Length: 420
Picture 1: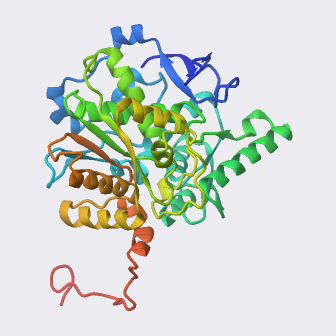
Picture 2: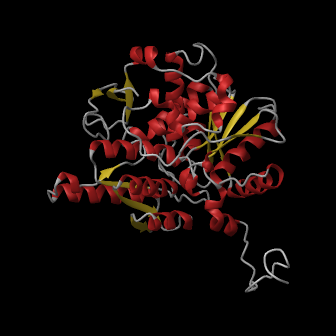
Picture 3: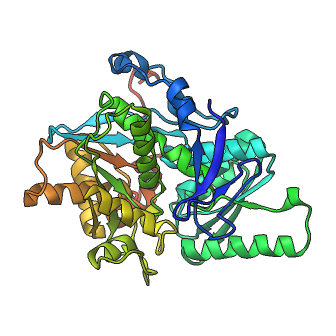
């Protein structure tokens, strides 16, 4: 596993030491990327032989199979990564990357596994996160595994599973009457108050918000390595990614940079078009993309049952929009009605219970197929970022589905397990 050479601000390219924990570039407030000695990695980092894919897939090391391009630390792991790529039954070119197979049921496990690993490495004792739901659940799980205290701030109307996770894992849970932006403000205010009170450093919370620390990107970038390896170290034509905070999309683009520099993907080969998918009720990236603006504006009155997409102003909006432009991709929004219809369609016809976020991607994909902008033979990797079962309350409410009023108290199992 490589040592970190330095941390680098995304736009100004300022170099900062990784010897102590960092949040943002102190000079510019930009997000930081982890950088390695690429010349050294070219000599030492190895990719798997594509022919070994089938044999390796059943007994892999999860995302830590990419240890050659991750920081040199002892992992805090619950078995995250190496999620299946399910081929569509109806569209020959469509692969659905099933991130619901991760611990805590979402792609957030990757980023939080890496962030908590580094927090333990640095000796941090308190981690705080504002979350639309799944990041809070993932932080609670990995913090419990690492012996670190997690402080979670979530909107009070997140899926009930996210609240339950925080309680079950023993986190400090705060449910907020507002959006993730309100949660972020409250986390910031609490940390500011702690510093003003001159609390000992070990008692001050460390904010691991999206793109406000450098290591969640490192965990998420493994999705880029994985999808390319699972396709025999080749790029697909397009990647469809549900985009709330957008760290996964940013991480995959960083992975493509690294793989090309390492020679794992042939230089000059065409990168996939990157599609950022949002809900019409909270579509800051789509609005900025449609208006050809370099950054998004705060999306007023954000409302959608796709809880993970209810991020009214992503911190990395400029980076996301840059990636869309560089790749020739798009930002597309779907209504809640279209998202729900896609959940039901893919469940009945593909056997997949998508999260609402994943269904925002399938709804957009189906629209582009219908318009002829995409062909069914185009090789597309579409991310279902979370298990549909984590959203049973939200999806049932969207369907106006209620539990039957009368349930039997017991059911005889005639002659198989119990006597008739």
